[in-house]
Image 1 (tube, one colour):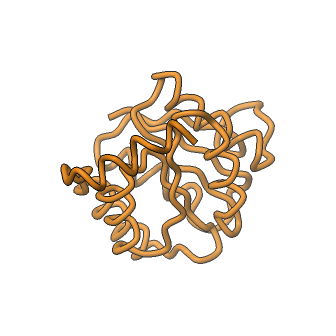
Image 2: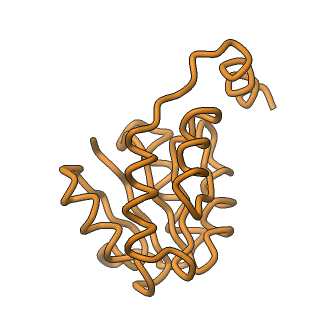
Length: 144
């Protein structure tokens, strides 16, 4: 899978995100502080990663900033993106299942290496729900 990754700094697990995705066999497109010569500010970097998803250059994205909040807000401004700020595996599983989230937002401050692995396990094992109500909710997002 091709995954676009953005971070506004190399603090916390930022570089570990890239390494772990590659270890899992994913192709990584890096933006912001993780890319070469790009603006590292969270709004710009996370927009680039989200646009990769919305425009078909990436299957999914992982966006990061100190709290994860700004990263998720920036990503969710891009049409077709459903970004979820996840601080644990349960939330990551729910985001994939009930929300068909295609962008994972992470806090560089709160995410440890162990929790990162658990979140990735849940995120990549998760599948969108086929329940009619769940599908209707996700579909409605395009109408908002």
